[in-house]
Length: 484
Image (cartoon, rainbow, N blue to C red; front, side, top):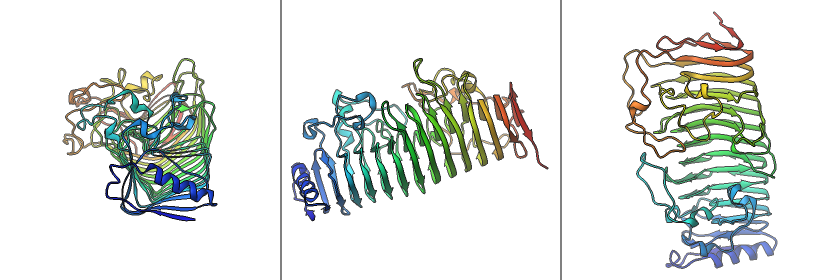
């Protein structure tokens, strides 16, 4: 069965929730088909997708979330309804699918989260946004698929959120293709795509411009592992992490993941891999990524790999068998690859990595004090070490064909890399150039390593800057090789 929905002149003032929901219910009850929403703006409360239904938004069709909690009742009560710490409190979404089979969201129309109804916008580069009232956290992801199978999300545009944009939770056989996500850069918690506890997922051709993580894999307490995920051919712009595994939501394992052929710009961290709550993260391949970290934030990182316990009671997991190959880009920050004392990163390969350094921010000035929850918080040496690549506590690391292009002596900082002020994660403090400026005679190493054993470092194309060394090693038996 197929049903078409037409816009009325007053659709933005009159909620269309009931009309659209009845169409979805009828198509599902008839065995399946398509609900087509024609061009127009439709104000709506929370909609629930059903088995065997393709919700198709034609070009010019906009579903806009109501800015009132009461229009979205009853709230969704499940672990997949938002961040795990809000279980039991309930949340709402513009579109949710729970326990569905063979469902799709397609077309070239748009889903609008009406985010500014929930927070006051701020001027770029001045502060993080604050909510208007206590109800804003009830808004979960704009679109949620939880415990579904055979899911297709294709072509649609999503954005203007005040929480996650697209959340796929404990689903199997998911295809996300050619979607576009655009959020205000200061929208709070505005992750692009969050994949939690899912298996057999492909994300291809996504274009994401957002203020928080662009594409992130996570696992929740009591949930499933996340396995067999491929992300490719995406264009990503974010003030946070572009391609990410784990962090504070890393309770179950993550394995068999590919990030490839992506263009990243304006990102605070290009690739982040974090086991902070006991997850084993393994068999990860990241290749063919172009990037820059040009953003008004402190402590940018092209790569950040961190193994530790987030809390004193946190279980410590493992990070192993990671390949990072074919990266090319610009950064004013450092790559950090760290494990807390008593643990080791294992079997890492970094190869064919070209890094241009247009300017270098000094981490020693404030790296010990600021940086947020995702800043190697159990590795104080690494937080302040002056080097392009910083390793601490690792076994079996191979680095091959690595090149770092430092600024020319006496060269000015290029336009676009000069900032009048910056922010740092976890603080509302505003930093000024004196807080990150590097003294002219301060040595910077190409690679600095503490407690690294096994594997080899090819120093052929490496050199330090301002008197720094190609490889500065402490308490390490890393094999150095130079080919002539």
